[in-house]
Image 1 (cartoon, helix red, strand yellow):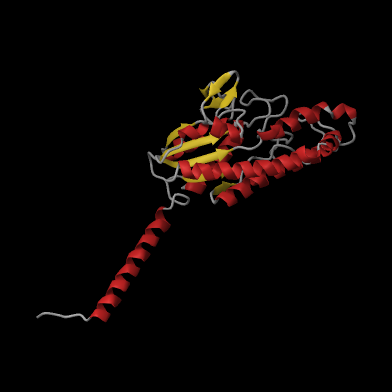
Image 2 (image 1 turned 90 degrees about the vertical axis):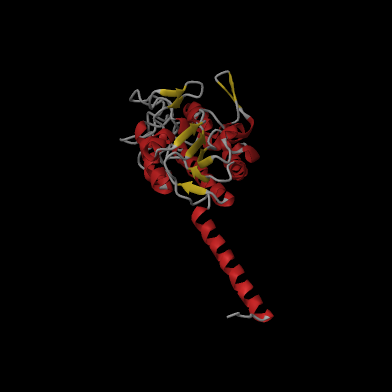
Length: 295
């Protein structure tokens, strides 16, 4: 028996079929979008970052040129999830170094971004504190000003006098740099899930502290800088529409001046961290948080 379909009915069927194809496509995108996709054993993981990622001193060196530890959080995550790790994190790196290359300890290093491609399945980025020497200003320059006014806030006062070059203004610039970098990462690694890894709590809100020799009033200033850096990272991730891992919240109370520090201060009390850098406990926490986020 032959069935005939009039023109109007045929159009309805075609429209319905098209709608089903569109919905099917949307469903596939929802489950495989790079920003939310699940990882599988053997997937490629590219880690970008500075020394908060490289974690010098926390284990045997996997990259001597960059003081990169073989037990930093990227290595821990890769081992736990069975990922193919490409760790190009490097001590001293800035957001601009990632795109343009870096000179560290008299060695010329290629841009970390060169490691990105459409083969990447996960990319993490931990950067910002070295831009405009923000972190170094707190632990070195601020400490040098302590004796000029031990009970006051000489570093905060000096920073206020910098006006447009103040730390707060520079952190606003860091946020813009990070946003630009994160967007570039999503272009260079279009199939990857991208996650900005936030900084831990480096500094306490109050002193005194032998591991961070600041004037009494500058502890609050240092803590404020820490908070601003973390907020800049989080805002940049939101602007670039990539993932964000909150490390600060899980490390509160374990700053370099705490009874149980996860960050080393001016004189590390153990041999498994370098001055001003993470202890293994902090890297283990970051690894656990990241595994939970991407699994």
